[in-house]
Image (cartoon, rainbow, N blue to C red; front, side, top):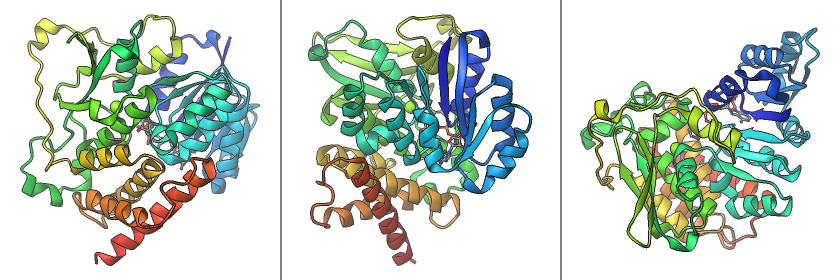
Length: 389
Ligand code: NAD
Ligand code: MG
């Protein structure tokens, strides 16, 4: 029996993970499930899977969770510290599927207990790549990518020598506004930004796909996870979302990973690694699909990509600042306080301000410094947004 914990179990990735493990329940012992506001979902899954522990991130909802779990034998807990404790409970495999920088500390705790960490939470590597890799190394823990592009790159690299890698190409659907006139983007509504042409995901990553902040985070994630320089990582717009990534080698060969847009592939790959097992995903009929399209991303449409390249060149704690400013700008867009294009402008202004604060971006990458930079970037984002009105 493999002991499994799912952080962010009630979200899109979490539910897809549960879909896979629920198919062979006897193979898994569920240690902990965590969620946020959706107590009914969390309690129902914890009961159905016989979890030892269920944790909500929201301390105000503890009694609601306790009531929902009454008589089940599942322990209940709440709050950020309880999330870390859940991640610290001995487990063989931990899915990191919290959204945002809130996933960092629990993910580190899972690595510290030596668990294999299946990483959907890309923010973990964006905020603290060097710290996370060092923590995994020190504790002999395996870190596996779950983001579809990074799982694709990982798979294309099996049996290859990193020294033979010339470039990595991440594909991007182009998001909801790929074909919109540039002039219409600023007034794009929340509902319009929240619908993805190909993937069914959480709201925040869906909006980040429309702005390409998602691809921006993934550029940094690629650099951190695979140790490839930013100038050797390319973005290619591919509207069909069937080729997830390509790796270019020194002999000119490109190895592409092709599959349906279904996260259960990348989750299942990480669950069964190093084996490949049957997964309930669609088998592509390429003759029926007929053609695949590719084009270069338009820099004017997607300023987030330019910002990510500056962050990769800068290094240090710039990733933590970038992600936090983006999260805050996204909060404001979701709340209707700023327009769609304002998000990139706010992030750029925050990066400029933090760069001017001596020693900040170059401080040592400890968890405390990362969290402090995250906090400061959110404050600066609020100040930038207040000064724009
Ligand atoms: P989601 O919004 O559907 O789910 C997020 C989960 O995190 C929920 O369980 C929620 O309760 C929990 N959560 C939210 N805020 C929290 C907080 N402050 N503290 C603790 N828990 C909190 O998100 P998702 O789409 O499943 O994405 C999860 C992660 O996986 C993100 O980092 C995302 O970028 C990444 N990812 C998602 C997909 C996808 O297809 N959905 C693909 C690739 C990568
Ligand atoms: Mg992705």
